[in-house]
Length: 90
Image 1: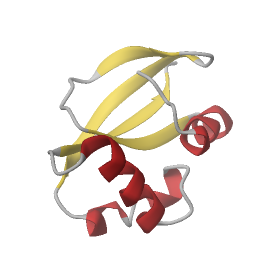
Image 2: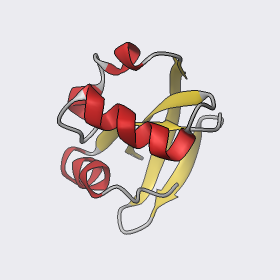
Image 3: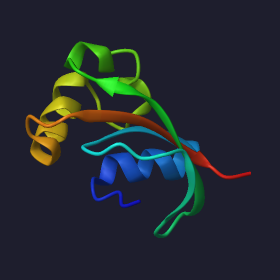
Image 4: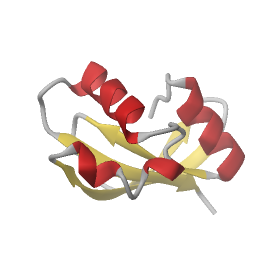
């Protein structure tokens, strides 16, 4: 799983977990994050409205929902959006 947005990868490195949105649905699995090692990817929910992100934004690496949403749209456009929790594998 790639993390090309610096604030997201930095949050994951500091905190050991991060919420991330992707434009494709994936199963829960162990993944490798370049530079950070093994992590677990856990599906949380489908996102249909940016307001659904409000409760997760403080653990996303972004300062506010608007910034997070605009970045999501840059990657996903008007396609479906899926929220995942990525955390260090133990």
